[in-house]
Length: 77
Image (cartoon, rainbow, N blue to C red; front, side, top):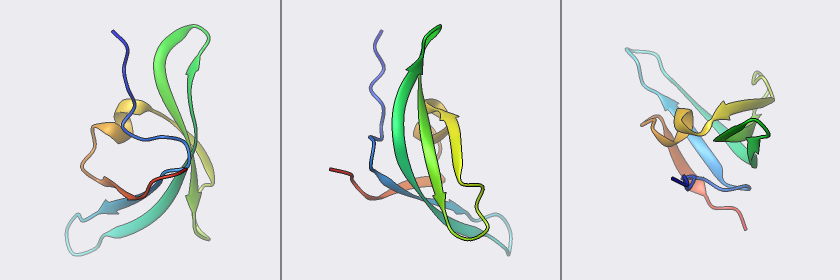
């Protein structure tokens, strides 16, 4: 079964974590959607935006696609 990713390269996402009184909102951009040579699963390479963000991270597609904490800010071209 072929999996279609929810997000595409160039999409900007908002991460919102509203736990308790505190919470945070961060922005990130999908820079690549790819598979590994020995794994048919999809992965996202994500660039986090902001001064305190870790920068470039890789996530299994389900981490973002199945989460209610990510929403699309704008679609890439």
